[in-house]
Length: 475
Ligand code: BGP
Image 1 (cartoon, rainbow, N blue to C red):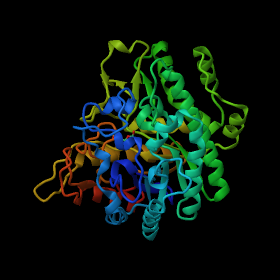
Image 2: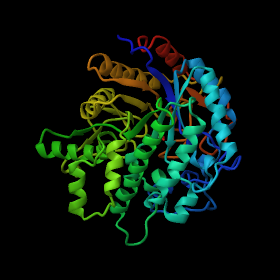
Image 3: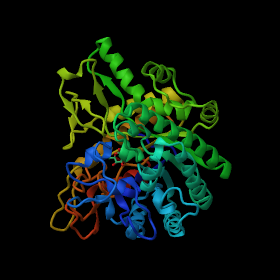
Image 4: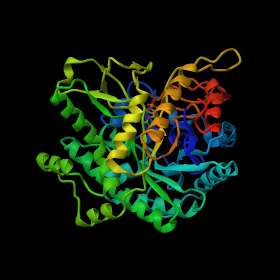
């Protein structure tokens, strides 16, 4: 069993709206993510098919308090340090910095909050990995000009980027421009704050909005490099290789097309141009994306330094999928793979799929990779002392660490680090539940919003501590 290379960034990952809470504290503005309720309407609100631009009676909004990391971050970072974290992936809430998104001046209290947080990380030698947008968009932008549907958004995003790049120069070196950029096709309101009008060509609008994000991402990369040449900028993909259900070439082709629907974004961010299959698709469907010559130049000149991605499971598809059973996965549904077990939420468990995905991405892009999300969402039952013996989680993570170690040491994939998702229990993005937990640290809070918010170490805490201390050898 091998070790990972020196300097490998072991850590964990969170996102502002799923852990911070304090949604209206210290001048923070409202964001799309604050308006997504728990419960049966969540999915339709995330998709934008159910419009919810104001809080409504009878709904619970889990982002409002989440696990209140806003007031617990020192305690939480101390626990991460105790595990030996070399890095911590978190996101900045845009509306803490620019409450409406388009304000002229930033909100000093918001800037100070993250400054203290980064200083706290650095005090323990933890490298912050910062997602600039993890699904959030100031709701004022949605109301005023339709958020990412409008080109205007690019300028406001860059204003926000410039502010944080300058303020945190020397404190933050790793930046991710957009979390799971391909999610915009599946959950457009949650991922980009966009909504649609009656009769609108929704697919076209999504690709237009995505184009604005891609241009913004390239310009942010340019800006980050100008402000500090030490900055490393990455894109972020909701990954998971598609398998073909059978060796029927029709199934193999279907799997390739599904992969391309996700790769499309990374092709642009990493290779610097829209791939031919995307151009042909836009042409065939008659989509007007509004790609200018200037845009093409920007995309070509400012590609990312590395590629980060989330991986929870592989995916399975077929030319005629109706004949097979379906299961859920990270938002995108998949056919049920008879060779794999699944979590309680139906996400299939496939460690070798991680090695396959790492290799596929490296073969395609030849840039360093970073696994910035992975993990098992499971319901934990603490004993009478509040201790969770989460052997199932250890088993999942061990197998995935093994797979990534093999991808590095046997296949030669350059991998910067590994930050398992929800290193401390937090609100689930897809379901809004607390019950679906990923953490090494248990947080006492339930789906109804009750609990002391007390943090306790699970069995996986000690396990991960050993993994990090031995640089992956002891697992
Ligand atoms: C990804 C998101 C995260 C996170 C994770 C786990 O899509 O980037 O925000 O939540 O999936 O998903 P869930 O919370 O739905 O279990």
